[in-house]
Image 1: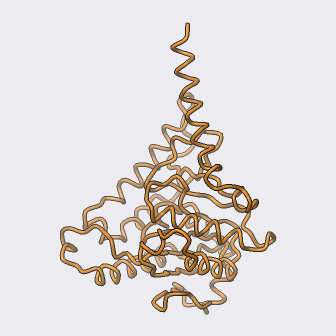
Image 2: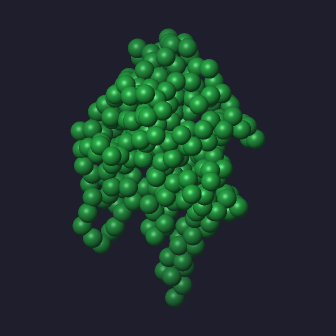
Image 3: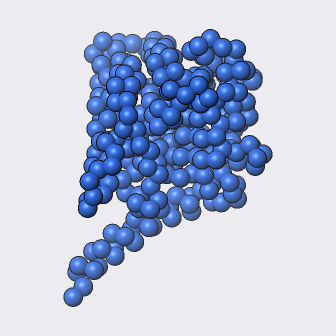
Length: 284
C-alpha cells in the first residue's frame, strides 16, 4: 500500500510481515482519534482476543494534535502530543492483541473537509488488503465533526469495493453522541460483558487523555453499564455491558442509498415514538 501521508504507520504487534498481518484481519475498526477504537469497537477486539482464526485490525485516521491537555501534559506542543498519542495507540494494540494497527496521521481539518478524497482512498486500500467480514466505525449521528468525516469516508470507501468483497456487517458506534435514542428495533446491540479487566486496561492506556483532563475511561465503562440496565424496563438484565450501534450495512450494500435520508429516517422514527406516547396520554 502507498498511503497518502509519508508519516502514516503500520504497526504489527506480533511482528508478522505486514501483508500477511493485513490478510488475516476479520474485524476492522476505523476510528478518528487515538482511543476511539477501544471505546467504540471493543466488541470486535473482544471477539478476536482468544481466537487464532479471528484478528482485529485498527485504523486511526487523525494525528492527535488537537487533544485537550492539562496537568502533566499542559505544556506539551502539538508535535509532542502527536508522538505520545501514537505510542499510546500502539501500546493499546499490543494489549488488545490486534492483528495490525494503522495510523494514517491526517490533521482533523483534512478529515472534515467536504469533497476531500485522500482519506477515502487510503481506507479503500486498507479494505482491499484486509477484506474484513465486520467493520466498526463512528455512527452517522455523532456530534463530533471529525467522527462524521471519518464515518462518511469509510462508507464511501466500502461502497467502492466490489460487491463480493464488502463486509457482511458495518456498524456505526457511539462515542460523542450515544445511541440510546435509536428505536429499540433499530439498535445494534453489542454485548461486551466479558473481560471487563481487558476493557479497563485498554481504556487506561491513554494517560495523555485521562491525566490530561478527560476521564474517558470511567465514562465509557459507565455508559456501557447504563446501556445494559436501561435497555429494557420490564425484564431483568441479560448483559452487564452493552455498546449500542447503528446499522450502516444497508448504505454499503446499496451504494445509491442517500446517507442523509437514511440517518434522518431513524430520527423521524424517534420523533414519531415520542409524539405517539405523549398524544396517547394527553388525549382523553
